[in-house]
Image (tube, rainbow, N blue to C red; front, side, top):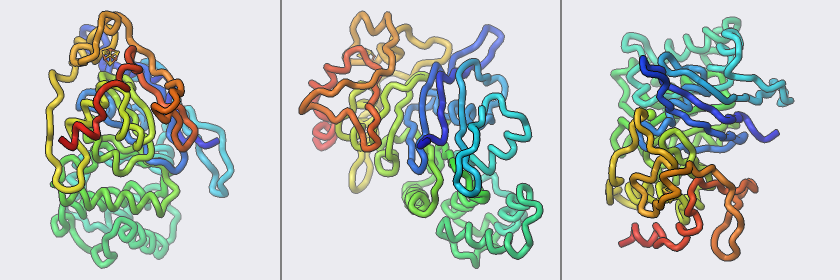
Length: 356
Ligand code: SF4
Ligand code: MG
């Protein structure tokens, strides 16, 4: 009853003349009501494709080739309604699902504002399209409320996009996504093209929103250090698969997958200016040639023969007294896909490496 979205065994291929290239290779993931779930991974790891698939925004040549996505909605009075099977939903169901149940903010979304329309007009148009019978006065109220929700004074309603800063424009896009009070807000690299100061501004805005709204958030980014600040739980993707899933604090202080360690070391979280410590050795795999076995074995310092032969399943960690908290605040077991997960406990703590 606590889940909003349940993704099971999801597989997405990009179809080519030479057959399908696997972009998402069997992902199981649940979004809880009210949480911020972070999805981290390098570009090409499948994280955006996953977001497109769960919102049914995937376009050819992308194609869902397996698995299911269930959305657990609630009626206005809060009572549960039958789950929506997203992947087989009708166009009418999808229209509602896309704006009223889930909303997406993409990277550089602020560039999709219409330059010749005011902020008020664009927000009103979004509402009018889905609530055609709403009275004009109520609509007017709602757009002012939305703008203030994202920290912009309602006196800016008459502004055109070019009269706003980049950060304000991105916040207007977030307001647009929130217009119909969706249960799920998916943000795909919402801060990536922005400078550091504006990034902080957007992050603050999102953290503020989560305390004021009942929505659940999926926040997708290549920058794991950013997720450590805002996410409750973090899922790490590599070559189309989940390799680690846990509480943000667990991921930060005791990452258990070798790839998670590398991601943490490449974007250390620091109070003060960020510095990039080390790029990850080697390139992320091309969809055309995903390595056999564990896809990370070509870059992994712990790899052995079995790693090249068998793809390790994502398994719940077993409690090891005094070593690791395998259960997070929600009682979820932490999950890791690695043949040598026990050995990762012997590695130098990432915290110590970052401080050097
Ligand atoms: Fe490294 Fe092997 Fe674990 Fe993959 S399964 S992360 S190659 S140790
Ligand atoms: Mg992406």
